[in-house]
Length: 280
Image (cartoon, rainbow, N blue to C red):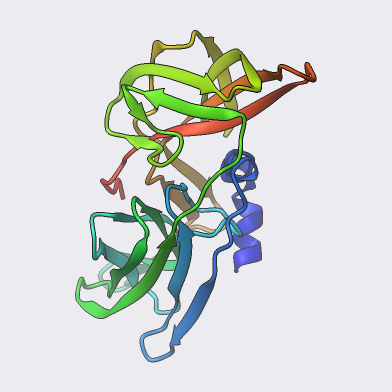
């Protein structure tokens, strides 16, 4: 199933998310899988993440818990974190729909089957947290409640950047998210490097990141919401793959020069708004 999803999501997700995660420090995430055959759910019951790093649906990136359902009509709902220092949100699910017809009454019944769901996390502080979620039947009753143990540890990143300030707050070293939709962006380089240019980028509907140059310490606007949907009509009912990002991303591409060696390079990081509301 995971290899199948890896292929069908390439068009919209992989180009953007792979590009972003390749440019972050390597994250070692350990996960344990639990199987509940009675309730028909396989899920990650333990996740290890790094403080201050952003995760979203992307196989191999870590920081996102995989949940797989086998009972038709069951769905993952009511995701809750034990602390405000750990954000948790359902960010991806795949499902198909089917329609049945009663030939006596001619009444149509539409039902859905949900296969794979991901829950993504972001830790503000180091610690061990618990995230719970419900498995709900098609009639709305709760089949079972499961929990995930999330361990967040401190981490540091190595780069030519000393500090990135947005709207007066240091977003680079520890808290790369904000609730402000616009504000001044200021980049401070380490002593050995010279700032050449700053570009602000966002993802379009094709999954491509486009950039526009901005001046240092000038006001920019961030992406407020990003919802990607891929629709496939493999059958009469169709199949839909959806993602609702916990952190809509505004990319920051910084071009710099090593003062001693005169070598030029680029560093890509990101600023994020918080999208706690589920759109589906």
